[in-house]
Length: 176
Image 1 (tube, rainbow, N blue to C red):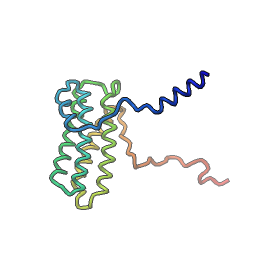
Image 2 (cartoon, one colour):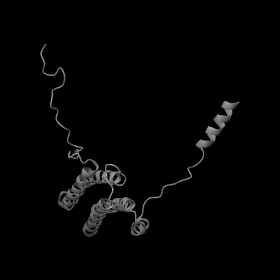
Image 3 (cartoon, rainbow, N blue to C red):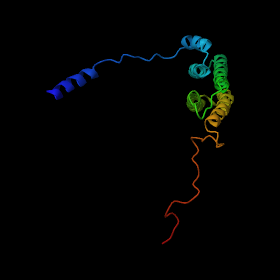
Image 4 (cartoon, rainbow, N blue to C red):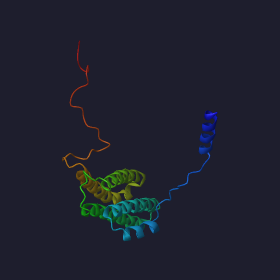
């Protein structure tokens, strides 16, 4: 009897729609939040979310050969990235002990760097020049954020370049 009651409860749960639906970010929502936010870490997080929107719109403009909008949106994207990093630095937080905000910026910059590289591959060769300074600036800021999170002095790992092996595998090259 108790098993049947549990099955009825579990079966009923599957048909219940979720109560919370996530809205996509819009510039109209994020700009007022950024302006009125006094907590620098939260402000940096909002700026990162807005920068992602700018990056997506910049990619769309580049695909449509709207060079003026493409340049303008990439400039806005970089300004938001710089601002979020400056806000985190000004917050006075230690990134190692309180990584909230720093971690989000690190992840966002890594994701954006991949998106920019993908964008670069999709663009015609003659239009790729606009992305190089953007990619360089994103990598520079990402290195700084990574250095704050991991101050041991190590370099940020490059995802596409595996480290070479220093010792041969066991059994390779050995004659018995």
